[in-house]
Length: 222
Picture (cartoon, helix red, strand yellow):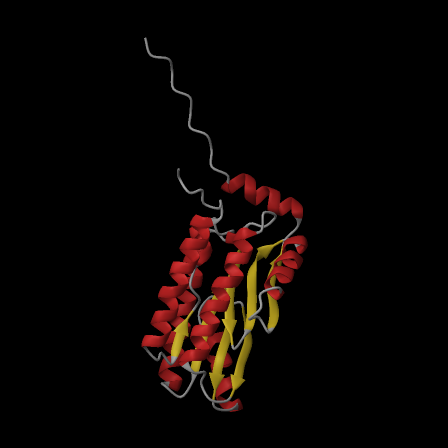
């Protein structure tokens, strides 16, 4: 007699496995400056950004990271996350001067539309803290995946020192629901919303555009 698995099992397994890999990487090396977050959302759904916007965000993250690395070296631990050309800076810097320098440098990166500077002043987080943040991110993402009333791929999740940053092109209903779910995760200390709010009509247009089209009918064979 075969053992029945819960319908959520494959998704949970994928998320848990990826979280373990990320945690192992965080424990195995000390990286002073990191680019973006792990894109688990691509495992379960389509990103609402255009493909061009996604490529541009990747380019922004790389250019910003290179610029900050040249300016600060190993004196700071900075994470750069770009979503629709709006950049989140998170991590730790030694003083206010470094915090302002980082913001000014990223503001000057090509195609950046805005910078949200969430850098903390203080010593760099430990590897244990960073691995805990990775696990928190995976738990929040898994919670979003399990929610039947949300499109998990519309959200990007970044965690820094227990604070979860939520990004995405979502409706007000989706923003409120995702915030509620993120706050329900035990290891989350605070939720910061960085959403681009769209209307329900715009959401319907996006869903129509991204919905897979049925294959064209084949003429009958004789």
